Length: 306
Image 1 (cartoon, rainbow, N blue to C red):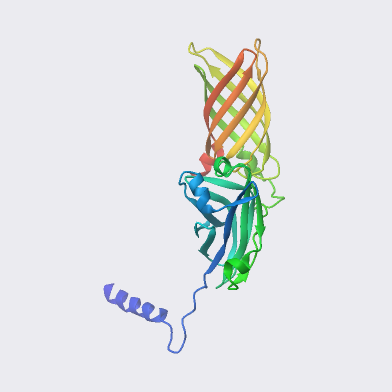
Image 2: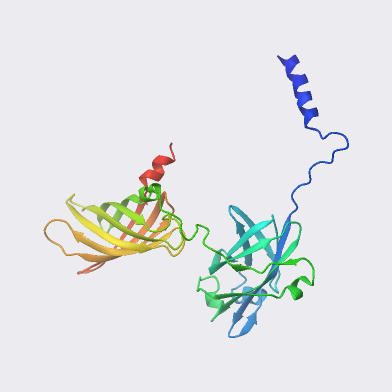
């Protein structure tokens, strides 16, 4: 067996070599994206270096994303930045601020040209107070100006950044799997009581995980107190996802059976499709009751084993 394997391996290796006189295929040329990041407060420019000093030395950086690919840009104290990327469309969705980030209210989209340095312009974020708002997602105003003659000094190409569209598509349909993903089971803790909640959240025009999604929900919950007595309640409500992985919801909880009154509730869900933490306030007649829980999505957990 060995005597046959060696000649075959040598033949395969020789076949993979380029023939004489044939040039090897050239790799795809890389590209670069350049520009300048600028902050404005009270009509006056605050450079990246000055902003870092105002924030106690927190590093300010810039990240570009294309699908699952992420490119970190080199940012100078005067705001000039440059990132080596593959040719294609790249999105600027947030500014790195220390360990946190400033998420742009409207992401920007830039086109990197093959084998060239592409200037995407001067990106300006305007705040009332840079020191307190930068990094706190205060929704500073974002504008793009063509300063490429000054920034690139006549070199390379110009393709100004522009508002990016929804990566999911404006009319992304909700399919049966998206509806099944809305079925959740949650272990909840309310004062000294333990609760088990089964709920179903149905999205409107896009899957639950997408930013900007609206949903309606309904569910039932059973509580056990320290004496193992039980009580049940029915819940209905609706919600909104301001960012991916975050759901803000509210509604009404009504007790099943005799006794008790209906009470409004508000909930923050933080996590992904498979599981998430829940922080809930129930505005009962006797005062606000806080509830904390962890939910799991049965169809997501089941699918991970298939």
